[in-house]
Length: 168
Image (cartoon, rainbow, N blue to C red):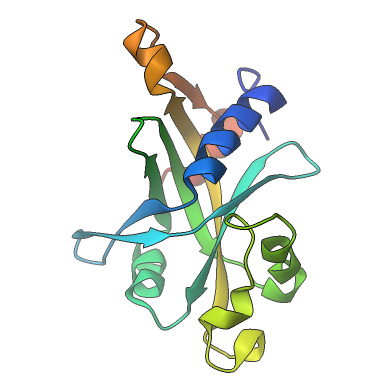
């Protein structure tokens, strides 16, 4: 459930920055508490219930998979040369039925939209093909021009119901 302080237009601001930048650094932590980051291509959507959800294609055999098993949390950090930023701190888990979501990646125009089958030997039917679902509990974003003019970045917690589910 979305907190009262976050509106659809605010989600639109976050998504506009994220989808313009396209690629982000996704950080996870392994079972020994050591961080690791990699560059990924999330797709963000606002769901029917009003929640913001990110999806990342991934190999189930990747180190990311082991990290999410140990600690099901991730941070997505977008930055561009204009110094616009967008950060999502998320609960992260494997989509148990990725076949329901593959089409979402092909719907937007490139560079946001792409064919996920190209990422996996054997295409989407590969047992290694998966989707990591990102459910943010905190968002932060700002445009450099606004920050340079003295504005503070926008920070939104997505409500007690989300953060209670996301934090151990």
